[in-house]
Image (cartoon, rainbow, N blue to C red):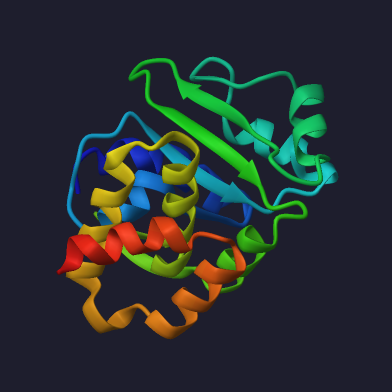
Length: 188
C-alpha cells in the first residue's frame, strides 16, 4: 500500500499503548477500494480523558506536533465533532483524530472494526459500510467528487462483502438517500 510506513507511524504507537482506534477516511477507502494519493490518515479513537497522557506519550514532541494536552482533553470531551491532529515533523504526514464520544456512527464502526494486513503487521480498519456512510456525509457537506469515486471503487472491489440491505437502511436513517442514488447511478 502506498505510504503504508507513514500510516504505521501513527497506528503502531496506538497499538503499543492499547488505545482503541480504527482507520477511516481515504486510507480505509484504499484498503477496500483503489489506491489514490493522500496526505493524511483519519483515525477514530476511543480516548477517555484519563488516557490523554497515554496518547501524548505515543507522539513525543521531538518527532511529532501534537496540540497541548488541555486542547486534546477539551476535544475528547465534546459530545460530537471533536477533532485534533498530530503531524510527523520529518515527513509532514498528518493524522486527524476523531474521538468516538457521543457519535453513534463512530460507536457502531468501532464495534465492527476489523483487522486488516498492512506490510508486516495488521491495523484496525473501519468496516466498509462505515467508510461509505461517512464519505456520503462528506460528499453532502462539500460536494467533492473524490468521495463518490472512492465509494464506487469500494463497492466494485468488495462486491457482496458489503451488506447492501444494512447499508441502505443506515443511508435512510442518516438522510443520505440523494447522495446514495448518485453512487448507484455510477454503478450502472
